[in-house]
Length: 239
Image (cartoon, rainbow, N blue to C red; front, side, top):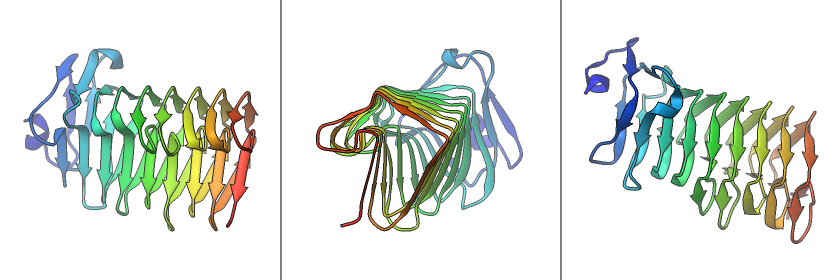
């Protein structure tokens, strides 16, 4: 109700506790350009989808300024945070235990993640991050123990999509096409990241780039990753 009552520029402070709701999402943000910020330890401020709904749905009509900060988002069904034609920042959050993607960016969304931990999420594709055609950046984030049963833990696909990962630690994830990161006909930049102990059931133990997109990997430590078929660190194909 506090979110519904907020107007552009407001900050909604969320006190320690576990929050849930009925309907499609625990928190549904439509058109409001506001900051939702947990007060205290993020581990004590829990947005719980109860395996029945999203944690957050953000639809702010392509405007910038929406911020989700300092909280735990857990047990989201399909999505922990779903950004639809919106441009939210997700800061200092722990997104965990979702049956689906921790963060999904759809439409022409532009999502910026900073200092987040994304762990123990499970989905067919993109349990850590799923970007079908939007733009996502993640800086200083940790992605670990996410499992993609048919795709990759961090997945960016479709022409026009872009994913930039800087100063991230990506480890102990499992997938089929790309044990950690998959780029399909999209633009991928991975800079200053550490990728270790990721496992791919097919190709690209750490990173798999497929199609006519652009993949740039620089200043990274890529080690102890394994793939069943090929690409013990990075695999790239265009066929």
